[in-house]
Image 1 (cartoon, protein in one colour):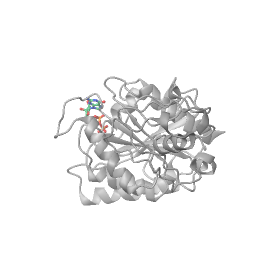
Image 2 (tube, protein in one colour; image 1 turned 90 degrees about the horizontal axis):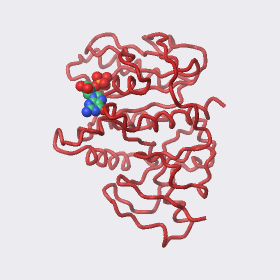
Image 3 (cartoon, rainbow, N blue to C red; image 1 turned 180 degrees about the horizontal axis):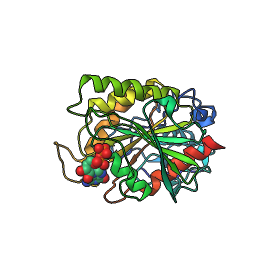
Image 4 (cartoon, rainbow, N blue to C red; image 1 turned 180 degrees about the vertical axis):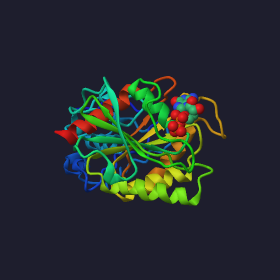
Length: 300
Ligand code: GDP
């Protein structure tokens, strides 16, 4: 079968990062975490080698190297419309029931061990202060003022659990990288948030928000590297992709490519990624669908 993958404007050499400890690791598409495609597609390339002149296995290898292929999808069955627009994410049979019908705030916890203990799956949202985390959460749930995380530097930072459709949690984690945060507050953030990541068995995935309107930030890369080293499954969610004008030098598409280039150098395999905007709604439904397939597979 001929692969009908259309290469997109931001086509880069990415495959998902799936930790050894994670359930997905048992699946065929994640069995070889060291796999890196031999295809030399640069992050800035808009003109990759067309599939038509390549063997099926080369095309399959290429697809595997750039796409997040979820459980239940055979690479030979891939078609263009299975790839979510503005992402490297393939949608598989576990996707479904993605829309949020009701959301209720459950609790704020100061420590991982205080978080809800009902074994529902959860997806945590993390990012630098001002990355657009509250806006994204409100956009996802289509409500104003849902995200409660304290934004004031130095104030107690809490893990906020929101129960969605009575079946799973969105977890709003404290933002990192406050410009004025004290050293003591920084230490607190790192100790308790790291505790959450390392001890939360029901954590399905972390959405690591990256501000596409600014160049790659060391603190984001440090965070991504730490999550990767500790086998925490993550998805890069690029925010503010509607901002077409350069703010600090480059445009969002250039910033995204620069970020992904660095990630490619640091990771053997790479997480899924998706472009979003809370202003225009770009990527909202696609992100919800991606979250649904991660969650539904975890929950089966
Ligand atoms: P948080 O500190 O991470 O919760 O960030 P906020 O959601 O409060 O957003 C920080 C700033 O970025 C605010 O001024 C928002 O209006 C703005 N912002 C958030 N998301 C977007 C977006 O998708 N597009 C644009 N243009 N601005 C955004």
